[in-house]
Length: 470
Image (cartoon, rainbow, N blue to C red; front, side, top):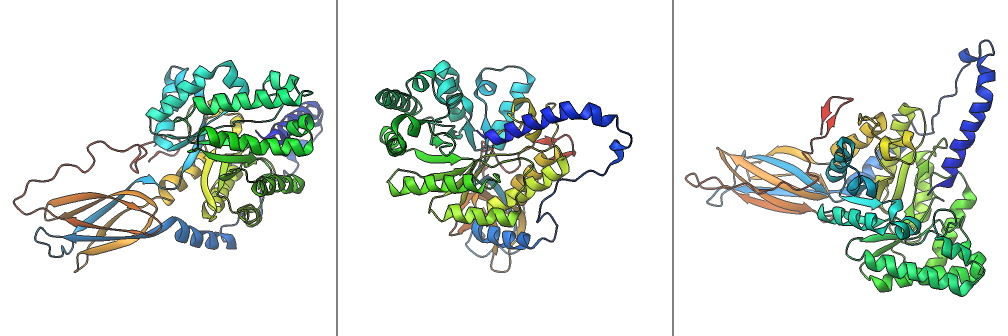
């Protein structure tokens, strides 16, 4: 995970603890002007917004054509057509905690599981699938993976290998640093064990995490041999489960002010590509703190990552700042930037609830489950602005149509008290559907969906802070 954020947070807290009591006694200090956190491109009329909206319309929508006919095949003019999205094609995901899914009980745990089930089709099982907790308590990890499978989720494992010596690698591997052969043996044994145990439960893994800052393999095996061993780990995971998508993941991304780190991460991506590692995805953690990069600059860096030819995933998004207004605005804007980029395939929050978040003030829901402004911004985008739900009327030819966000739909046509419905999936190529109304003396058809799908568009999540329903 991101180390800079926690270091800065700890440093800030320490400075404040030392300096604030003395400063507070200085006359007038409370009245001094405060610097407000902001960022370039926050303005409502910032030029990047129009361009992003145009990209979203082009990339994330397609034409849905609808034709309604009467029982005899003639066009049904002036029929009411309801278009209801049941599942988005683009995955908006979150990290989830294994213990909250399968070990905790009570109202908070019930609410947590309900939120996971209703809000997210894709999830990342966070630290419990890393090596250290896996070897300590694999049963909790496996039980949570089975819970997610049973609830129809696409599951992303946190890391197969995270070569960090305090929290990532087992003590056995760290202790064997001076014995390269033993490091190789122990590491591959863990890869074999975990990937095999999770086969069929995990569809995607961060194969390697944070290689730029964690050089354990280079230090143990030698620089060239250490890098080659990383390629071997990718290949071993693919060999064990050929169906897996394998990511490289790092925080040298748009949230990081260090150009050296960004360049270093890109050098690793190039190395893996040049040496034939089976990389499927480039992961960008995106842990934002006080440094809020402008949307236009973010787009430029995303373009650089996209140039490698891999899909991009945001794997650990959070915004850890105290100014809740700026936090909400940046959530809205960075989500828009990411969603508008042609290489972006998935956006994952690194947690959503303050009661189970590594950076509590970055959460979208407070400890009491009231929604924060950043949560409202996320919900407005994901469950309103970027979904298509519409009511149309057919013309004289019995046709209607619209631009619809990619995903699954239920389309219902009604005329003169008779109704019919069909399911349709809108892909990048668009979609068309014909609905035939029943004859006047025919019995009304049963519902097209006897059981409502999970994560459907009429999701009812009571927004206790704003009094709105989703």
